[in-house]
Length: 111
Image 1: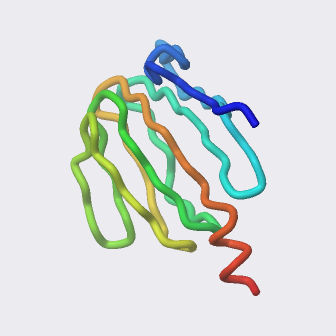
Image 2: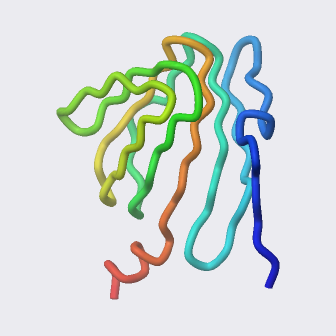
């Protein structure tokens, strides 16, 4: 089986002038990896996920709400979220963020 590599994640998505873009860069039975590009001022409204997730901010600054906790995210901020945690993201500057959805955790929790 071949390895999957990305030497520079920031080159894998172009941040739109106005809006948000997402691109799945890897997926298998255990994980889905999505790269997001947010224009400054864009928001991802509060929602939950049925599986654990990791947010890794590659570049930019964002306000992240995790339940009742507020985080001022910047390049290299890393966040682990348990399943069903309400969360939202607001880009203060253009942002590139890597989302890792941990499918195996969701399957384990349901079993």
